[in-house]
Length: 477
Image (cartoon, rainbow, N blue to C red):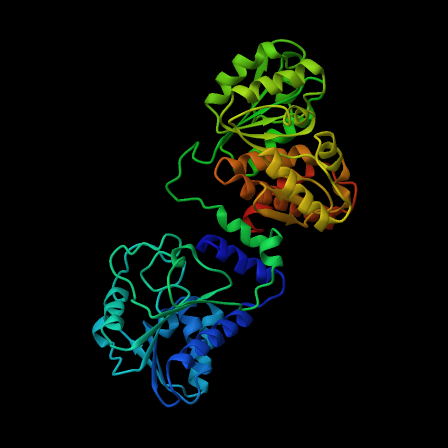
């Protein structure tokens, strides 16, 4: 089963893998036509009612596979308003093939005649809420046509994810949905799930389509996209500074760093954008936990680990914090050793490399496919989301497992994991743990690839910071 948002991401990932949208639309049209041929005899009439989105494009493609039928395509609106190039190309192909087409300027201009089958290609899976005009009246006309009705992907007017009908929806006899069942269609009779050639890799591997999860409404305010608290430093200063800056570059509105007093000024010196909050002493110890919990209460996500060191009382402090914390946290570096033995209500994303995973008690393997299976099993046992770093990063919560292939050998340099932890924390403020970890790994690796392409090996972890926004939102230079 796949939600509409995830389906849009998978479509885009398929394109990145070399499967052209034209191929997918062609396969979709063929699949719908097969169902139409099961419902009508050659020579009978088929009316395809198409909107101007890609759902309509699937309807245009369907028409070309119905030779031997009396086909007419009704377009809602002007051809110049067709939304995508691939849909416009399929519309143009109808003109070249002299397949009858009619423009519907308003709902009163729709005359379906007396078709034997109506193909509903009006609204796709990405449309929510009650249908507006002219679509509402068109849906009403389709329902009153007396014909057998086939809907493409979902019945127009129905929410693909919930199955909810806010006002009116097409009363389809058959639904041809693509790639996987949409949640709103579960339990419904007459649903065909058509394989249109989207490879498994489009779901398995993180890709540019995953960036669709990053939405920024125009009326957003400060704080809407997360306040991240980095708890780190003591033995090291660069690591917490990198994590905090990465959180900002990945979209967090504010980044706080809690660090021991002797290194607080040094960490502040890395960037004026960080809000550094000192704690007494030279390292994190259990006596700091009450204070940390108060600070964490006003933040959306906590990053534990960058530069903390592995002193036994520091690790004990991490464990005591997690036992009492019930928010969201990214756990990295030396703090990871506290995770297996702690009982917590917190939502954790743990970011070990393979050596750290082994120290946590988790299994690993050189082959990424075997490793992915092992990580999934261990994540299920641990009850946490894991982002296991490697040439192929593996992300799993025990149920959903994703693999990231971005990145390069230049990223073995110290500090890239701190950048990843900070970026993942920013994303965790708004996304699910698997989404945040997957997109964090993709962005971190993509940033590293951009640096190496520009300068060659010898990159610094700090070089990744400027590339993170482009890795997440696209290169707008």
